[in-house]
Amino acid sequence: MKVSQKKVWLAALTAITLCSVTATPAMADDAGEMLKNSAMLPVRLVSIGSTAVVGTPIALTRQISVRIREFTKTFADKIGGHEDFPPNFFASFLSVPCGLVVGTGEGLLYGGKNAFGPGYEKPFSLQAFSLGDEIDPDSK
View 1 (cartoon, rainbow, N blue to C red):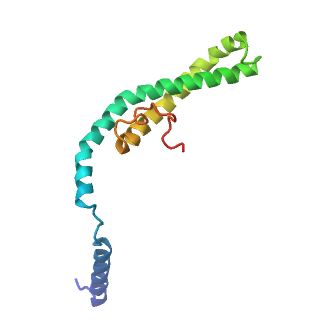
View 2: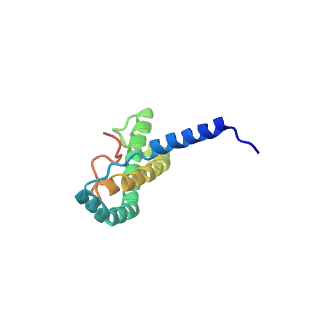
């Protein structure tokens, strides 16, 4: 099996090019920042776990109640107005199941986002436990 000299040079130049591109030095943090990040890692991991366990049911409850109220108002307006009791009563037969389904999906989504986003960046904060003013961490 004979390999041409052109292929050997091409392979060598490709290897040198790839090594020079991937061997650029990484910019490291200073010693104090590195020590702080290393010490905060267990705290952040515990925060993610606890905010996922406690914050997700809070997010579920918040979103289910918000969606049930929104659907009740919307459905009651379609059958007579949300200011009166009878339209609200009859609208609740449809708005409660719809609010449970939509609110459960949103609560699971936002509970997870809050646990892994703010739960890591700001451990044990109100936003991490889904108790902040805005339940969605990306709605800014």
